[in-house]
Image (cartoon, rainbow, N blue to C red; front, side, top):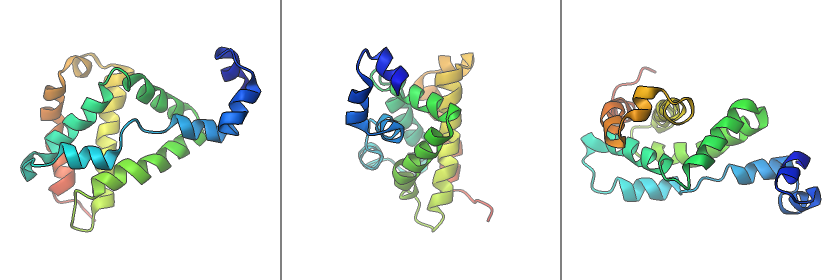
Length: 163
């Protein structure tokens, strides 16, 4: 916290005042810039069932590609990858928000499992596209990625999944 205060040119007590401790500061840093439930309900309204996977990918990429949001999401991933506490907090936040929202798209009792598979797919896309920067994936348009990855996400949402 002292290093952060130094970089921000503020007294460390100011950070303690606003965040309490390191966990409080991490919790604040892991607040999503969108409401996943609202994003999905508004963004998928009227989408035919067979296109939900593609449109879900398009929605998620649309959030990632907002100039004001992308650096924050990249920072969240970088921090979580390198710190156990941040990883635990990110996992908890994702389960409480994103996974819960995606699981509501499934009505056969396997929503949690299916939503986590969607999350894994999209985390892989985000990591390789926005952090690692695999050249071909990074150069693809949002529509190209949505059309390429969407069928896999569609399968996770509606296909057969082994018990």
